[in-house]
Amino acid sequence: MKKVYVALIADLIHAGHVRLLKEATGLGEVTVGLLTSKAIEEMNDRAFLNYEKRYEALDSLKYVNHIVPQDSASYKDNILKLKPDYVVHGDDWQYGAYQYLRDEVVTLIHGYGGSLKEIPYSSDISDFNVKNELIQLGVASVSRQSRLRELIKIKPVVKILEAHNALSGLIAESTSEERNGNLVSFDGMWSSSLTDSTARGKPDIEAVDVTSRLNMVNDIFEVTTKPMIYDADTGGKIEHFEFTVRSLERTGVSAVVIEDKTGLKKNSLFGNDVVQTQDTIAGFCEKIIAGKKAQTCKDFMIIARIESLILEVGMDDALARATAYIQAGADGIMIHSRHKDPAEIIEFMQKFRASDRHTPIVVVPTSFNSVTVEEFAEMGVNIVITANHMLRSAYPAMLKVAKSILSHGRSLEAEPDCMSIKEILEFIPGTK
Ligand code: SPV
Ligand code: MG
Image 1 (spheres, rainbow, N blue to C red):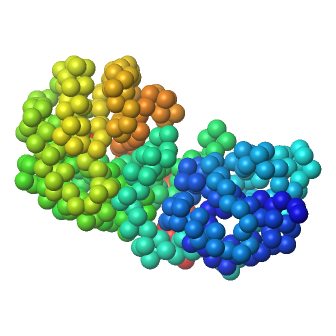
Image 2 (image 1 turned 180 degrees about the horizontal axis):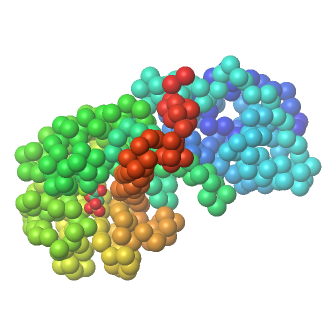
Image 3 (image 1 turned 90 degrees about the vertical axis):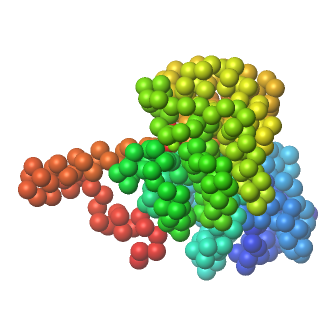
């Protein structure tokens, strides 16, 4: 009996899977390499069901003889272990993002005399279409909230991009690029108090009320599926923060970040150039405790943001606060710095991770922007937020075009700096 290998996500099993497996059975004994959550992430795909649920459904199919985990997008480990006579796949990977996986499979199996059998892609049904339809029906929003915790578990580092409106949300949702041979994309969005205020022409001083902020989150959620971390500034008064937590949960936000400052909040990147007051450890712990008590969904996260380095009160204070905030129930810590040199962040990470290996750590490297996501992952950082770059890049482009229209008395000269009408129509899903 020949050995046949098929790698599948097998989420929401449909006729396309059955056709592929039926063909595979015709070639021999079928082993399915069932992709783990980690492998699915590497492929920038997602599964609605966890590994165990997908295994259970797949295991009941008569065309499947064995199931083994495939823990990476690459087939390499399983192919070298199983040495299948055939690898079966749809022919759609001959082009596009997964071509690199196909190339590797071809090299590996030719190395020992195996062959690749490609089945014509089922154009009437595919994972992509099924999932897109579900997303459009809004089913994905049910799993959006818990997604952040999942991502922290399975990714070396979670990459979050600021979104200040639905359009920038779409960029966070759908942009991907190749990096070191892999296709990379953002994992979620940051609702920044700085850019949400700036987009409304207001200073970053908690002047935009929570209801307005939530309206924006809703606009973004209407067209995206990725999780969101919400910047709630100081969280306001304890009694108000309890309401904010519940409103955020209801909306489907995954995590809220509150910073340990009191009084009129100013943006952290001013540092001590403006008057900023840090809360007492006890006072801020009380806010965390109240927030955790108000929370009703188990997966929602309250992340405590430490401003000690911003306010130059020292590393020991930052570390003491981290310990206290975690004891009070914080689900993660954001450590902030406004130095270009990442030295104090590196020192914090070393000292913090010496005694706490698991609590998620978040950084916002607006100032220390020379550090890569891989380097942050090495340090033990879990979430990297690129916090204001969509707004900061859009504004100069708009200003340039506005000036050009004024100085030329027409828009002809500005046209090369603009996205074409065709591009913008195609960018928005569902336009056609
Ligand atoms: C924000 O994006 O609003 C933040 C991060 O709070 S920072 O601007 O660096 O304070
Ligand atoms: Mg902010």
